[in-house]
Image 1 (cartoon, rainbow, N blue to C red):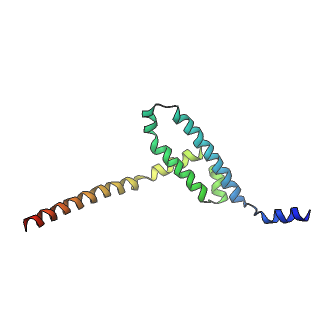
Image 2: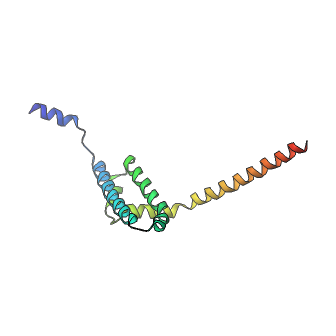
Image 3: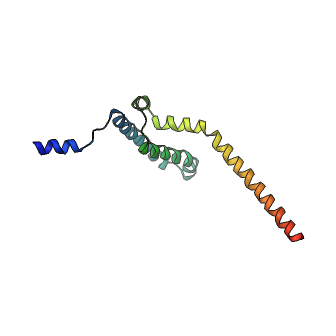
Length: 126
């Protein structure tokens, strides 16, 4: 009996927040599996239309593996019928800055090319 107690003492107990985070992850994972099954039943064109959403939802799951939110936050999301989709929609709503970053990168790269070509012409004229 003492050996059993020693073995149990060696196993760390999960906190309430850890248990709730695990439950939330499992619920989100099941939601993603259902979405994946639906997606695979679609035409190739429709699948391509949903690649961003699928990939982002996968990224959300990856974050949930590594990040622990508070017990209160986990409970709030667990109460939702579709926490993964809800988090995805919130992320997508916030994504405006991402598109601005891409737009800025396009503009900056074009300006760099203009400058490079100007310098190339100038060096050829010398």
